[in-house]
Image (cartoon, rainbow, N blue to C red; front, side, top):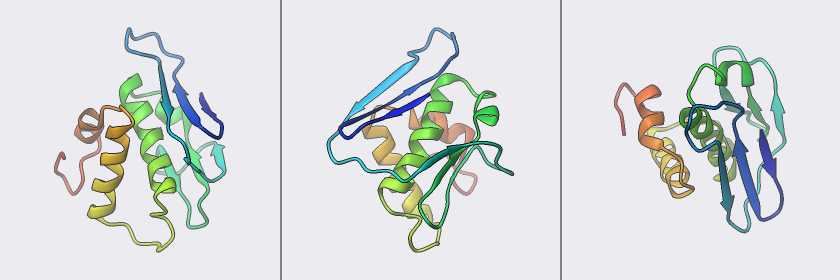
Length: 122
């Protein structure tokens, strides 16, 4: 579950893996686009060219809590940093997003083992 308000956001998983199931991020001035849940072809999450965030909860369920939360946080970072606006993906943007997600307290190293950039972990 993803909960947003003007000052904080939290990501909660429904799993009972013994890992922390909630991550609450208390940062002012976080702004995100509209968030939708549903089936996505070929991805766990995406940010569209118009800034909408799509998350596929069915696909996210196959990962452990830390990776699933990092995937969600990574898509939020793409949106927050405006990386969707120029419609060009880049390794540099991925690294920027990774640093933001890491600053929020998510396990970016574990995330990148599952989703390497150009075949390389960060």
